[in-house]
Length: 150
Image 1 (tube, helix red, strand yellow):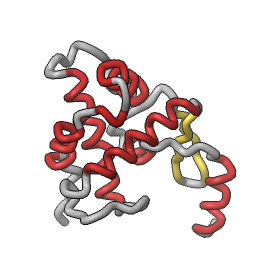
Image 2 (cartoon, one colour; image 1 turned 90 degrees about the vertical axis):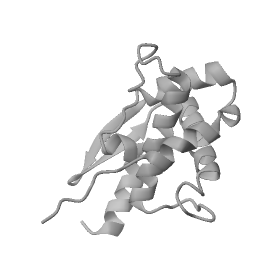
Image 3 (cartoon, rainbow, N blue to C red; image 1 turned 30 degrees about the vertical axis):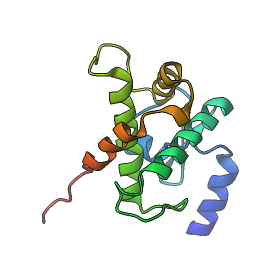
Image 4 (cartoon, helix red, strand yellow; image 1 turned 135 degrees about the vertical axis):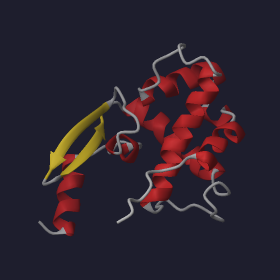
């Protein structure tokens, strides 16, 4: 299967791609609204909740809007290199978790992205009102997997 065929098949199977698919596939988070599937030798993640999808999409858009400096970019288009996308997603969710929990790790099980976002919205009201200056600090400090030396 060539790449174009794969993309066509992927889009037909996954009508609502999980916004945080890279985070879930990297095993750095999970979501109660996600549905995993395999296509060829790759794994995909779909979102099975329309309202949650919209909230996640709004969060990712706000992270992109606020994280240009953290990623050393003047502006962020829709597509980022994989490492930057992982840094944005995982670092952003980690920062959101820190803000929501406020140092109390027993408050909630934050392995669930949907649960984390729900708790954040309950605490702050709207996604636009989240304290992005605090969240962005986690993006700056995020370290991805280090390359192995040969």
